[in-house]
Structures are given as structure tokens and as C-alpha cells.
Length: 237
Ligand code: ATP
Image 1 (cartoon, helix red, strand yellow):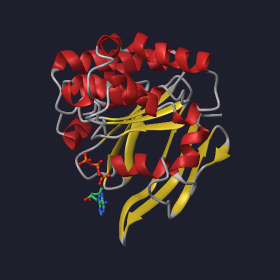
Image 2 (cartoon, helix red, strand yellow):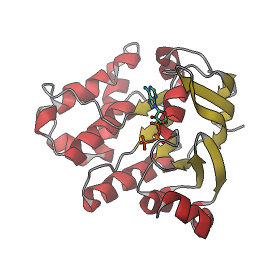
Image 3 (cartoon, protein in one colour):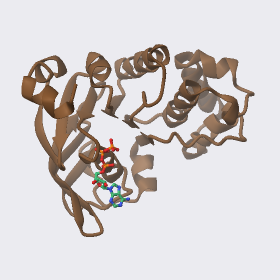
């Protein structure tokens, strides 16, 4: 049974259809990328899985149970976390405080468990440990992205949805972030990644889906999918 299974998903903004029958699956420990041009519907797919947009048709199943139509809060509690494109770092809170916000769903857990999750994030992103007392607004773009991922990870999700993590970042930082995502996959977390940096994302992904106008046009192993001239033209890569 896949960790996440999306089948024939339809969604729209007002009356404009955006997702028109999207199907894909993510297993535990698997990194799955969604590629497509601007406006293809990639972010909308993530928002719909997270419950920010109600599906008009189709199903979303997480760990064998339907989550389609649940509120974002309930979906989060089931074990899915979202790292949005704009990162949403609190500028006047410290790194430590920003991370602690991700622990709010764990308020019932012991302080030892909370400490363990905290240490896990710092282990994955040592820079956040070095800057733990710095305010969010003083971090570089790459560090803010690490903080956004760390804050999602600290609640111990089984599936992480990550929207355009490399956007606007220098290649060296992008490498650092992608290596961390890869390690998270090795730890058994499922990752659904939307990314414009197709070639870089392909190196860490087990599978990829290509979207166009709200539909999946092809999918498979990234190295094979991207060998296809027609796909590369579609993605302009
Ligand atoms: P990008 O890389 O530009 O984010 P995307 O593939 O993620 O592209 P979406 O953001 O999912 O695409 O947008 C899909 C379509 O839905 C686009 O035509 C967009 O204009 C439209 N859209 C996105 N958000 C809204 C909204 N809040 N209200 C109305 N239409 C929207």
C-alpha cells in the first residue's frame, strides 16, 4: 500500500478547473517530483492534498485512509506537513522559536521527545544550530529555506510536501538542501517535491510526474522520463 495515493483528482478555483484527473502515488522513503511549466497546476495539487482546496472529484488516501475534504489541521495531525514556496518564516522570532512553532502538534509528547525532534532537525541542518538565537529576518534565503523545512520536519510527519525549495537560491545552498531532502528520504519519510530545477531534483528522486494543463502527461524513473526529447521540450529543459 502506498503512503499517499491520489486518484483522478479534480479541483478548481471558483469555476476555473485547475486539476483535471491527476493520479500519482508516493511510498514511504520515496522522493517523488512533480515537474511542469508555470501554471500547470503543481502547487494546486499540493494545496489540495493539504486540504487548502477542496477536491471536486477523485480521492486522496494517506496510509490507507481517505483524507479528501478534511481540514488542513486534521490532515496535518494525520502526519502530512507542507513547506510552502514563500517559506513563511516569522521574521522577528529566533530560529529556535520558529522551530518550536512546528512542535505545537506535539504538545502532548514528553519534553525528552520534543528535544529528540529538535536535535534531529539540528543534526540535519547544523547551520540552524549555529544560528539558533538569530532572528528569522537575519538569515540568508538558503537558511530560511532550511528553517522552513526544519519547522515542518520537527512535528515528525510521515509525508512532506515541498514546493520549489531551490527557488532563488545559489547552487551550493541548493546542493545542501537537496542532500538533506535525500537523507530525509533515507530515514523513511515520503517526499512529494514540486521543483523547477528539474535536473537537480531528478538526481534525488525515485520517480517523477510531468504535469501539463492540470493533467499528468507522463511519469516514470526521472532519468528515463527526461531522456525523452518531447518531455524536455515540454519542460523547456
Ligand atoms: P507555478 O510554477 O507558476 O507555481 P503551478 O504549476 O504550481 O505553477 P498553480 O500555481 O497550481 O501552477 O496554478 C495553476 C492555475 O491555477 C494557474 O492558471 C493559476 O493562474 C491558477 N491559480 C492559482 N492560484 C489561484 C487562485 N488562488 N485563484 C484563482 N486561480 C488560481
